[in-house]
Image (cartoon, rainbow, N blue to C red; front, side, top):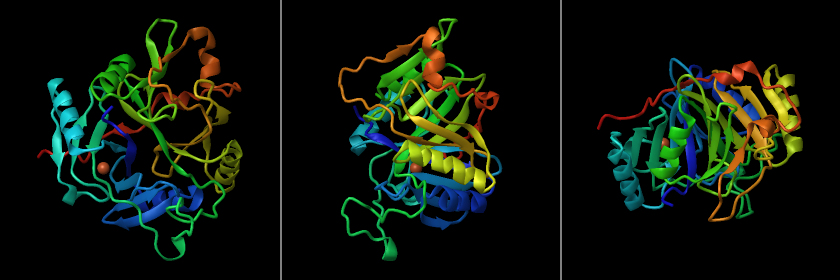
Length: 315
Ligand SMILES: [Fe+2]
C-alpha cells in the first residue's frame, strides 16, 4: 500500500486573517508560520510542519488534499498508475512549497485536487511551546477544544462509486464502508490508508464540491464543549453535536469565517485487519448510520465550496 496517510489540506479562504484567527483562537489549532497570504497550522500532536494551509483566494474551497507516500519510488509508481488512466500529473518542486519536498499533483476523475509527497519537514517547537514530554511535539494547549490531529476530509462527487474505485484501485486507499441507496446506487463511501475509520469520505452531488475538513479532539465531551464555545463566541452550528452510526464518531459541523465547512470529531471505530471487507449500510439502517441519535440532517449539507486545484502547476 504505497500511500501512508492523509497529510494536509489546503483551504482557500477569502479572508485569511479572519480564518486564521478563528482556527487558532476559537478552535485551538497551532500556528506554525504565516506569510504571503498563507497561514500554516496543525493540531497540537500533529508531528509535521502543518496539516492545514490557509491560502488567500477570491472564493472558499479546497486548494489541494495531500497524501504522504514512503519514498519517491512509491510516488513514481502512483504517478505512472494515474497517468495510465489518462490523467496528467504535474511535478512540484519542493523549493516552491512550504513544509514538504517535491510532490506530484493531479485532479482525480471526480475533481479532487490531489497531491502526493514523500519528504516532510517536522514541526519544531520553540520557546514556551517546547514540552518536556517527548511524545508532545508542543505543550498541550490550554484551549478547551484544541484538536490533537488532522482526521479526514469529505468530498461531494458526481459518481461516488467511480471515484471510490479510482481511489482504491489506482491509489490503493482501502474502502472501509459504504451506503447503498434505495435506488441501488452508491450513496456514500468512506476510505482510509491508516487504521482510522476514514481519511476521506465521498457523498453524491450533481457536481464536485469540497464538503468538510475534520480534526480529531480527545473526547465527546470536548465536542460538546466546542459547541458551547462556538455559540458563545457568535458562530452557528450546522449539524450536531451528534453521533454517526457508521463510524461511531461524535461529530460537530460548522463553517469557518471564509465559508468552508469544518468538523470536530471524536472517538469512532478503528480498523486493524489487513483483509477488511467494506461494510454495506443498506437503506433500512442508513438513517441510523448517518445519525445514531436522530439529529435532523440539514438541507445545506448537499453542497459545499469549490474544488479548485489552485496550485496545480503546469510544469
Ligand atoms: Fe502540499
